[in-house]
Length: 213
Image (cartoon, rainbow, N blue to C red):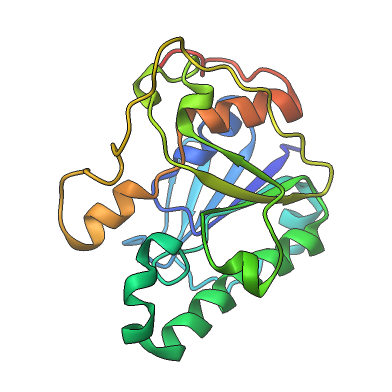
């Protein structure tokens, strides 16, 4: 039976790439998917994470769990607008993060929950690790830029050693990304490919066919 990897709040499917290449069965759950579909080893599931449940078979075969909760109402970069958004926006954001934590602990596999620098450190606990995409740019040269990202981890997760390209990393690439509205927000939140390749390598060994950027 194929091992399973579950990715919560995952729209692009990029975080599943090295797992799918290695033959894992991957499930990317996000309410923003236009419809349920399967591409190779990746199943895109349209669902509200607050009401979604994995099957017993998925849980039994799950060897990795990752979640990327929406950061719009948690990231400290948007603190200027927190007050105007009201308590409902904050409570919903915390609830979505809590759902990720619940499933991560229940499944018991190595896991990561990703967010930028955010207020969740105040409401829950400080992150276990941080990284910038440029820390893993040898595995994805186009990602030699900074974007401080926090990880809450557990279940035996191994943080991969850094492998940056030489030279200074670009700054403000994500901040200055073109586009408007939700499309821009989705593009800004895509998991860095170099990082997730390094995660697979550190925790499960090299995946075939994922080295070229």
